[in-house]
Image (cartoon, rainbow, N blue to C red; front, side, top):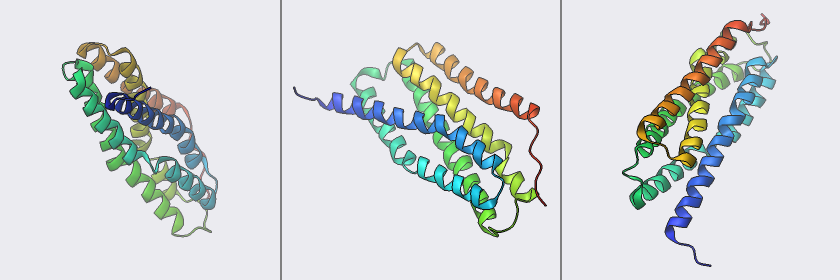
Length: 188
């Protein structure tokens, strides 16, 4: 059995996609624990778990991009879905770097500033930041769409519709559920 460079790139691409999709699926559960934690130590514990869960994501995202570009050069440049996947990669990277990671860091700094104190309204507001939860849902919607697009390789129009639709559904579901779910009372 011999492995070609194409086989290795395809394996790395699929493995990276699995890793990123796995963290995208697990993150909403961890964020729910962060948002419902009843003490700062519990909140910091869940933030630590989230940090460990996503620690490898930047490197994995670059493996996904590099292997995708290589595979694109091997014949996918002319496929419309390929460009939708590049847009999805840029969007996810931007959301992770500009929204998700900085918000998690702000929550950690606020919680660690006085770990013995109860969770106050200021900390509660940061951990329930609408942008943070919507960005996380947008990434999940994107990853689910990209999994299907990577497998089915549909046309540009279908790929774009799947991507936009999946992100919109994930964000709208979160926004709708957030309006219906009352935020727990905060200790003062």
